[in-house]
Image (cartoon, rainbow, N blue to C red; front, side):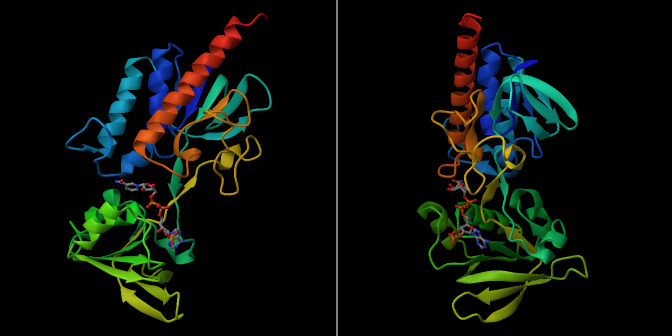
Length: 310
Ligand code: NAP
């Protein structure tokens, strides 16, 4: 039986691993579908304190993992596919193998949101992507479209201008959710074009097995028109990775873990850390801080249990 199993290996999970490993709790980290979490698919991170020149996301998160391992944290690949939080010790099914843990930290993060079009799902990896850092390279000299109006859309569009002939941002409203600085940076980029008040209704060409264009719809007039593009990048936010916990801990309507104060979930002994609970800040540094908080709560609750009379 493990003292603590940490689910997820992004900033939150890795930081929880560093702290619990240094507390000699020998944590086990289940890496999940996307080892390293969101940082593993970002480019330069300029706002993580301590790196005046910025640092590449994948490097930052890999360094965190190495740091945790140096204190004795263990990592396993794979995902948690089932949980039993109804009794102690807790039980987690990791890729078919049940393991027991005295405490659990859920740091499973959030994954990219898709539009939900049939054509989109069929063309993922064939011109449709949610990760500019991963796939931008394939669109050298091509026409690229980015959907979204937040910081991710601005960041991805700017990044993609390194490769594309032009990059068109399509956003469903007139106003942008992106921060001023990110929006300004994109506005100043001469390779970026803008289409507002529009949504993607369809993506072509499923039959050819590659993206050749999209069907846009003006949300105000209802007018539809086709735009030729070679690559379509979705940057429309994220959904929390909590499907496996539904019915076992309290989640809100969108699937985010409901916090019971500090890092506590509705099940005593099961803690949350990072984007899986945080729909407001969602930064590398806030996720790391949440991982630290969860680890300290785990450490204290184990100490209390070990010191309490049997
Ligand atoms: P976000 O802020 O939630 O923005 C999502 C965007 O997608 C919104 O503009 C939203 O439109 C649009 N959208 C959502 N669903 C849509 C749909 N079905 N069809 C069309 N458009 C849709 O997500 P994000 O940009 O990924 O940012 C998440 C967090 O990470 C934020 O806190 C952000 O500041 C942070 N972040 C920071 C950096 C950085 O500082 N370097 C980089 C990336 C992200 P509406 O506005 O109309 O809702």
